[in-house]
Amino acid sequence: MTWTPTPTQIVARRWPIAELHDHAALAALLDVDQGELAWFADVRSLEQRCPEPLRHYRWTTLPRPHGCGWLPRPNRG
Image (tube, rainbow, N blue to C red; front, side, top):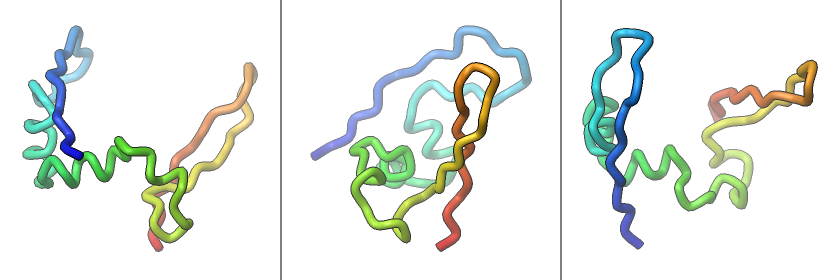
């Protein structure tokens, strides 16, 4: 299976940020290849089916006035 990035466009910027025209530019900024970027983005939804030690994040629910929110925490193994 090959992951092909699709072009993105920033509509409005509130803060001074680097302009990234596509996923390849994001991968270059993060110093990872596009396969690693796809792995961290979990484009294949593998995190839902893998054992806990392989997950990138652990999620905690937070009570909110109109429902709940999710707080991601990096999984440090």
